[in-house]
Image (tube, rainbow, N blue to C red):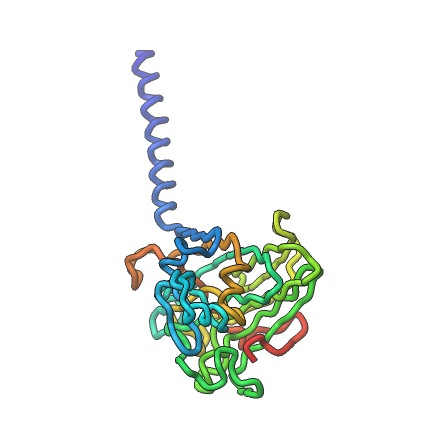
Length: 293
């Protein structure tokens, strides 16, 4: 009888453990998956699946930039983008087209040179070739749809966050650019750009390369999401006055993003990136002209 009681108690305890395990598995299945993506450097190997785009041409694969050819050498010196291939999901609509799902993300990279570089989220198509005003947009063009730009300066760099102005007058202020202009007297610096979907906030931090992520952000501002100047998918990467500034200056690019689970538009494990439009941002720092003005 004693053995039977012990066995009964053990079975009860096992049943409780199984129920707890089932609950944990069930809870885990409903939780958001986090995808990670890394480029330690941009070279002939890592750039085979990247796209380079200027105002005059699109180069795929971007590794052709390393070919010893005058045309590619000129492309390297042209202002443009270095982007992940294709588009990525950034938000999903629900009933009536209202925003149903959005993703948090964090990305970091180290700048080893003095040239400014912008981390960008574009639309679901690249800017038109030979667009009037170039990739930086019209110098004097303003519109009621212009997004608010926010800037802050630290000892290592000046950071500006605002819209992309590469799409011309029909879409004068879209997407997101976060431009980092290094302090030329400082050594390499690491940049952290984070979006918290729950709180709808963008933050940008900068520290010397090798130092931990600082607690204090240079920029910490609320964001409007999925506005009328966004698309459900986007191209993501970097912009610079010369594409070679990205290739030479950016190191250790890491991206971690929440991934929509099931029913997505793509079957691949690409990154779900928030496409943020700063047009509805209430500025918490000095308002300045965006880098793409």
